[in-house]
Length: 125
Image 1 (spheres, rainbow, N blue to C red):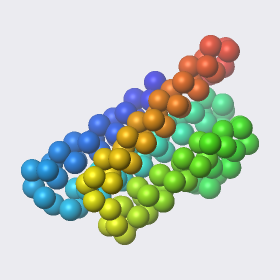
Image 2 (cartoon, rainbow, N blue to C red):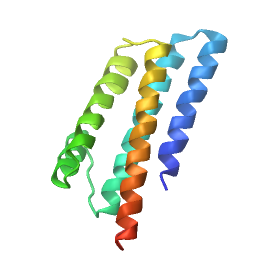
Image 3 (cartoon, rainbow, N blue to C red):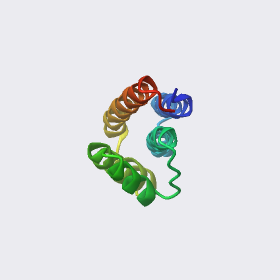
Image 4 (cartoon, one colour):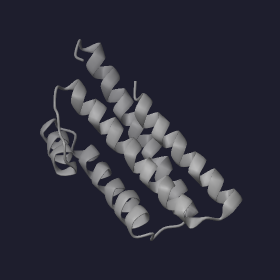
């Protein structure tokens, strides 16, 4: 469950470790993008468990909302802005911010895991 998401999150932390050794700021940006990928992978797995295919980020947010996961919509959108846009594209964050954001990603993955387990327990997926 959530193997791809966890793999992306692990890679994000590895990028930060490499940054600590090299000081290359591109690694911080790459870590942020891998953190964002972890969120996307987790959301795609959750939506897939409900039989929903959503290609764009907007479709993913809309699908989460329709399924009654409004709080996940907010968290998804926040990570998109902070990790994907601000950090990766604009380079507007540092190692400490990315570490904090990755903790949020871990929380999102845990929430998605719990939702998947509940769905599986109800005979879904």
